[in-house]
Length: 66
Image (cartoon, rainbow, N blue to C red; front, side):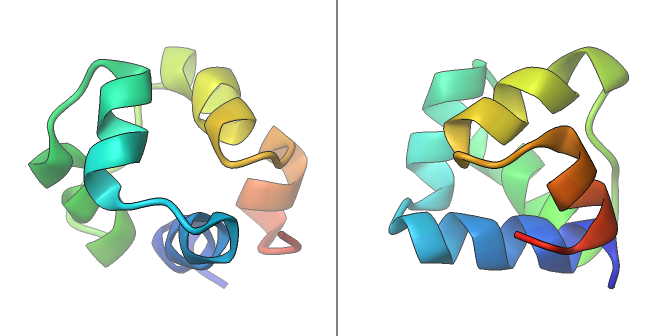
């Protein structure tokens, strides 16, 4: 599973909008959209905060097990 797909499913499972996740991370909603559609990847420094916002571990996000 791609990271973007994993992010999308984790976000939906948590019931969060792209805007809500973006606000927690200090990025734009468009940035979250890029990550989810595979047109970009999060900076490595954002992986832990992103995982925390989605109540998942970095390992779960990267492996698609969330």
